[in-house]
Image 1: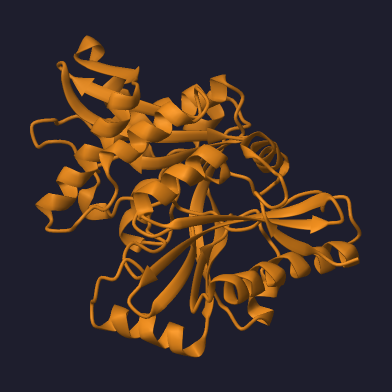
Image 2 (image 1 turned 60 degrees about the vertical axis):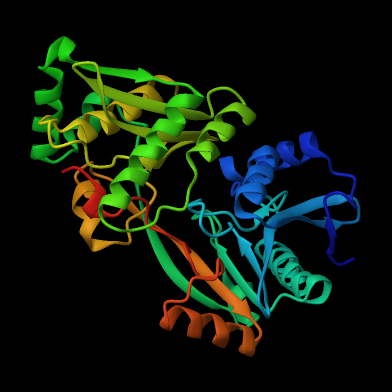
Length: 361
């Protein structure tokens, strides 16, 4: 019996069951959840396809993807462009206990079947997927003539004691945190609400605008995610100095990991304290208190920002950006890129969250 590829609706897998399957998958993330997918589709202006692989009646994999049409090209993305969602892609279910041979066959059949579905059912000429770092078997993409490009992120191990975690920081990070902590009541860290989530994204947008760079994530996207997802999964941490907003981090909590999704932009020049170091340490401390195992800094592929992120003593992990499609579709997208043409298909793919020129040191 092979693997059948169906949409979740055709397979009668509603939002609650979809989210339970995401929770069971080692590759399931905050952004795989039903409400998060719906909001991504709305803000990307894309049509959402929630594919499910079935072996008989048993779900074996989930593959959410977003269809965008620009001019002569139909593209499929997971995650969609322009929203700075770091990874998405396939999430396997019920394969961990299989033998190596059966597991390989199942993963290959699901991924290849999903790619065939994109081509046969919606005529996709271009495919772009950023996989979660826990999807280790990327061979099915290569075997279907996709390019597989390694990407990187930093992850801090939080299974140690707080003192052990902090002792792994660089000397300047420890000093910066101590300097902020010695500021007393002049510096305040709080967990905010939906409005705080929007405020953090608005500050990032302002920093981009100062550099003449467009920032394509609407502040409302963060606010709507905060309201739509279960309480505590999206946490906006805000820092104020002398009562004024000085910085913030939007952290996502899912499974055993807290992710540093957005924020950490450079504070105003009037703020002399290194608030970003304190914010990152505060998020880690809160995560350890709640029993999380890891803090994903969400990006380690830009040499300009690695100096900041590496000072927290993280380990390097890799994931992948996959590109596929017809020869004509890939050539046209590549031509758009080379000529700097913004199509919505080429803008904002696989960003390394918040470039160094926007980040406070």
